[in-house]
Image (cartoon, rainbow, N blue to C red):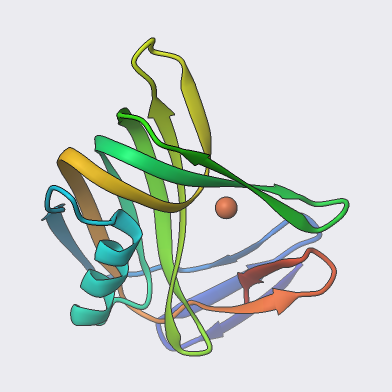
Length: 158
Ligand SMILES: [Fe+2]
């Protein structure tokens, strides 16, 4: 195991994981997304406006449409699924980082249909119909991503 330390940051690496001290500073925001607005667009706009380059997102609400994505790690391809019906955001969880210095969102959602069955996946877009109630936490520091040829995804670069 290698330990590397510099001002306010500690990086730990092992054969199983890598970890970086997230933050000693934390700001929490409650975000209500307008009826009819697209959630990923709203998260990105808020992150840019508040200059959040490292943070977390969670919340609930309701949407009238959504596009979820599934990543196949073998073929390194994506399959997108579009849903055009009223659904509850039963759970939404995501993070904010940067890619090439620009705000980058990684968000997953579990959406509940009218019969209470659920669909879930990587959230590409969703339009609020009803309430959109979220908490965004802003941490200090910057977490940049880099495309990994090996994995086929944009992975934390530290
Ligand atoms: Fe994802």
